[in-house]
Image (cartoon, rainbow, N blue to C red; front, top):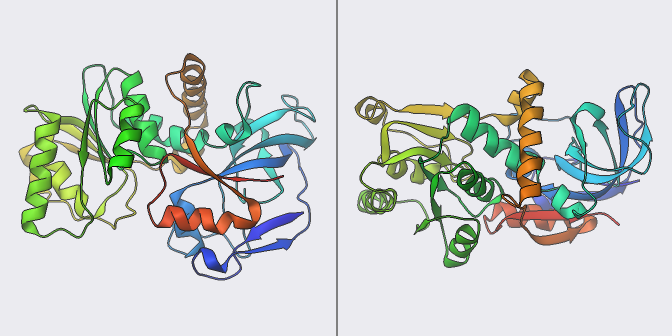
Length: 331
């Protein structure tokens, strides 16, 4: 089979398409003929050895896929050859991949493979962040930084589904339109960091004006960097600041504000959560499928790339140009 491989540390230009041996479905596993694999920011970091997980080389990027079951391992009863499935994976940018049967899910007939590959990680991360770490409730005000990316749009949609008022923060008018389409009530368009003191203060004032006088009950930060300080300054009394990612850099938060606002800063590590509490994660995924069926969420695939151009998809993600989800397709 063909696989897009990282054989050396570097950017997307270092990835190569090569023939490798077909994987085998062991006990409790299923072999999937991949039809689509979405791109996520960890793919950018992983090939540069900047992610907390460093797989041995050579490896294929890509962590969520959809496709057709080609073989089932011993003990697998919930799937059969020919079933359409989606799930989290290691090495998804390949023609075939092995999934754990317990963490794979049937792909509804009415959904495309591209949509199926865009659900698990982004919406799984966001529902875990908002429900388990943020304790979201109806009537909350939710500020989402990076609201037009994969996890950002997921957070906007889920916030609306849970009855929150959502304020989206994005970097362009085009991204603002995407955030509004996902259900955001207000949008703040910010400039490109780094910020000086005056620019940081101006952004903080823009956030405060958008969230209102009582502040944001939850702040979903998928950006980090210089955007974090202005954001936390608009947090509500006993608010929750959700640390989801930092493509703009690891921020330095003014911890005196956590005392003054009696607020919580909460880390969100969905991958570890799925391993530590798989039953809770499965309950979340069931909730996501219900929201999907009801039309409350809808993975937004805005661009697709064939497998041989998977590096271009990762490069677009690295440039922070993605709106919604980028998906690599496999013929």
